[in-house]
Length: 265
Image 1 (cartoon, helix red, strand yellow):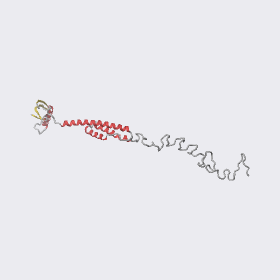
Image 2 (cartoon, helix red, strand yellow; image 1 turned 30 degrees about the vertical axis):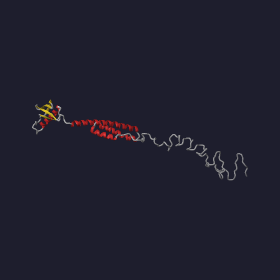
Image 3 (cartoon, one colour; image 1 turned 30 degrees about the horizontal axis):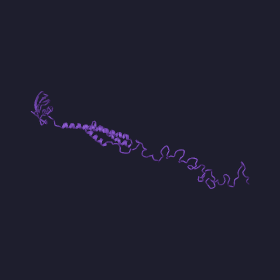
Image 4 (tube, one colour; image 1 turned 180 degrees about the vertical axis):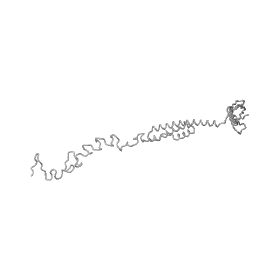
């Protein structure tokens, strides 16, 4: 027997409907369910909070604009978004950290350095060859520094290589000129128009005769101490010979062939 609802007392329920007995009340979204105000029928049953990321949610959806922190990869974040343009694209790497600049590197003057070194060995071993070695060493640094992205160092090494090779070339040319001068002077025939040249030639010939045992003029231990020639006419020199044994002799040298040869009388 039901006595109705008593204030402060227990409430009677129809059979099978009391608390903890029978089927639970329908969830929101089911036909006939009465959800709280503003509840959409399409939301998931059993959720006590509004769906994250859905309109009307108490908190903004993760990954949606308006969340407490900017979205990763979206404009406005402190760092560029992963996968966004600008990350890993050309221009990100800085020179000196594996960045290879576009275009060809500065010249290293390799061929010039080899030629300068060879000429230095031939014509100026003391100065030209060391300068060529220093220039070649700077030239070899150009490719390495360019490959590492150090553009300024590569350009500086190229300039140093050029300057040292210029110095080496100048020194090699000077050595070549001196070499040619020595060769031309030593290869040219002696001119006997000069009395000193005639005197030196006569002294050498007399000493050879005195020192040769097979010669009729051989005298053991006797040497020519001096020969002095003075001009005595056109193409004629008068010469006086002195020996280590105190003896003297004289002869007349007649120059012929425009100084190419002479004869003594």
